Length: 492
Image 1 (cartoon, rainbow, N blue to C red):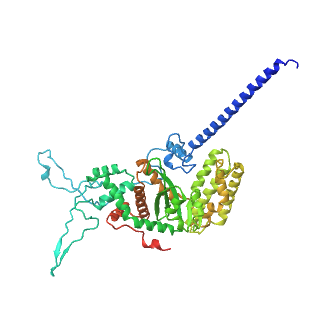
Image 2: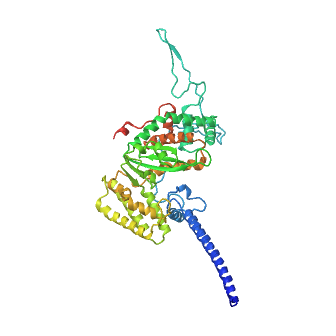
């Protein structure tokens, strides 16, 4: 064999080096692609706010968050405004009224002539001033003496213990117990601060255990009313449903508070974000009305056999389309869909004001046409990523568009029946105070105590929807006379 060309060995060596470099380049490209994906995910997560997602407004001020466009515009307008009351905004002013009591003030001291002004002749009122004030509210020590009386026939009778007085020599009165429940449940005051507040304002020395006992007592007294409230919501024609996270129980566990709401009733229960928890609450299994909710799949589950239909919350859809508008700058279809949905809400309000059973067809024809074409344009612009439906992550907006296409009736149901709400704002307002509670108190140690709080909240919120004062109905509750929904609430 002829001797090999030395250049062949060099070529083979260079080919090996090129192959090794190609492998390194491929690995680096994979790392870059992974980092690019992580960056896009982080940027998208950082852009989430209450204006383009289901995040609560309380999260908008977290570090690194960009506030919603509506909030940014409001801040820009606020910079141009003058401080104080704005033209056209409702104001509050005091008016001269008949006083509850009058205090007379007479000149004191001595006159320049040396005489004591206490002996001067009273010439009447020279000027009057009225002042709004709250009286000091020191706690009173009330002793209830139960007297005995002997009838002429010889029988002896003893007075009965008044309502709210337990069979104990020493106890705390019902109004003070109601105040503790009001502060903890309705004003979200932590237990220790509630004890301090009661001591500072009323002078009554109570313990943390006393506050907890008040919660347990109020929950037990309101139990029958809470069951009635849930039954009335189950019988309602339209009800809103929502859920929110709440830290309760052992550290590391996350619970969900589920809520059901109508214009007259509110009900809360603690559980997991599962079908079983929603069934345990006892409302959806027998509910035969219209469910107003966000796009959470459990509200559309066939397990709820009696549900007459669903209405997707348009407020959530508008936020989701706002996310699409920010994700795809320059795209027309997200703005078009938002315009159509807002037009439908405006038309629904107009129809309600006129007492119409549905939005007029001539008004809806153009709006539904605009919305349908916006959805079709979006589906064409955001193609589906191939793969299994439950495990393949889709591009932003794709699942929203498919929902609006496949469940068009659940999006537009309110347009044919004005008794159905187009948004679930009533439910969002109902669960929002729970986020305030979590911000103030952090984790609640016991699930049972948390459910007691939620039952009391159901009782208070429902009573307030009927125009009742929270302190008054809690006082009646502590007296063993719980407020109940009026009789007309039972009529179909």
